[in-house]
Image (cartoon, rainbow, N blue to C red; front, side):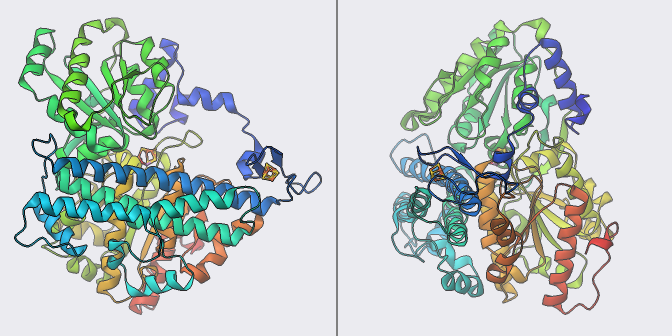
Length: 634
Ligand code: BF8
Ligand code: SF4
């Protein structure tokens, strides 16, 4: 039975253990929710005001309007905008927190150091901040102040990173009034518009969603990525291990889970502290093993090659191994179930963010002024917990796969010999047909990791280079798709390029905020070819998405001009108008649209057809290369 839930063997085996241990997982709770509410699935329920809740009858027999008069189109569009605003807020608040840490790093004796001075200077230059001959801390502090302004801007066009975009895209935004003002302003306005009796036009609501999301992609998330690189180092290619088998029975295991690198970086440092290692040895352990999970895991995986224990749906399973001394979390995608589950084992579930509290967690708040001290305290409490393990509850699945990681924009350019020109050349020559960004979450509604892997295998087989982030990247790492050897299952053209450059056919570009790296690459390619991003042979997919952040991502990827396929069904089908707009009409405005397709093979075919059609239009190719499996769909 469990093999139907996941295509990751370690996960299947751990689900058997969960059953044996009589503990609940996300899959059990999903089953308990079935059948899920159809009003919710279609997006046609509203509880925005206290005249409601209201719902629309999808069969046209019952009420077609909420008490205020809102119809299905308005309700669906409003609900979607709330999701975009939430997702954009999560990413951008993460960005804001990173700037705050960046500022702290400029203080005397701060625990945080500026690790990439070159990137600081070049970013300062890009943002118009004087850097030449000035002390590094002065440049950092000026850059931090400038980026803080992006949150409170009142007029459009001020984000420094908009200069990365081709003029064609900026003109589209300008024409449609999509150029974002401040990050906070767009998020607040979105929430304002969804208040009862404000914006009641579906198209207007959706366009505000795109504008808000663009503030996330081209400012909030991009700030998070760029400043994290300056603070903690720009990722460079390295090898690392992935899956639950990275946990070690003979060591103190600490999992860092969530999204922000601010604490996980310090935990990695503290775990190398000689005093703490000595303490671990004195407890009978052979050392301290820090492993990541989800996107905070991706951050330290990319920068330090720290092993990653799994993706979103594996967070409970890590605790169920019985060897995790501490599960340390910050923000986003952390199950509130973890506290209760941790109590069934010996695991300490430690929350660290002032904005994220959980039932039955031990709260040890990160004090950024004394970050190393906080991290040492957390590591010490994990070490002291080693002797509390219940031996009978221990089982670690053996799966651990080696992966090549660390492909920042800078790392890819350097692997290509210093610029993106060689990549553009092999795309023009047709050796690589195009690029696909495949990203996003896991979702128990679909078989764990299955769509991620199937979709990507088909893309690379058809000579499409894949870039990945988030939980998709972790799925790829576990499945061996991030190894150079994975080029063996790629098409001949892509395989040759991989062999010549030594890069894998699937490039891990980081956490979900690092989708901004993908935007930067797309924009740079469009500028090099003097075309719009929407003219490039590019496509995106989120095969197993579930979070509100994914909704914001889909909206900014779309707004940036990239065709995007969603693999789980968004709650919009209750409105014909919203569905038609997103999956069809919006292309006339933005040069890109969404598709919803749950079958990963068909999704891949849609992306390949799109890429081939773009090649015909951009490069004047007369015949599209045949999709090796599914040409009938193109
Ligand atoms: O930011 S992919 S499940 S962990 S939301 Fe969450 Fe989705 Fe994973 Fe990272 Ni992104
Ligand atoms: Fe009902 Fe309108 Fe209130 Fe929503 S805003 S709950 S549709 S009355």
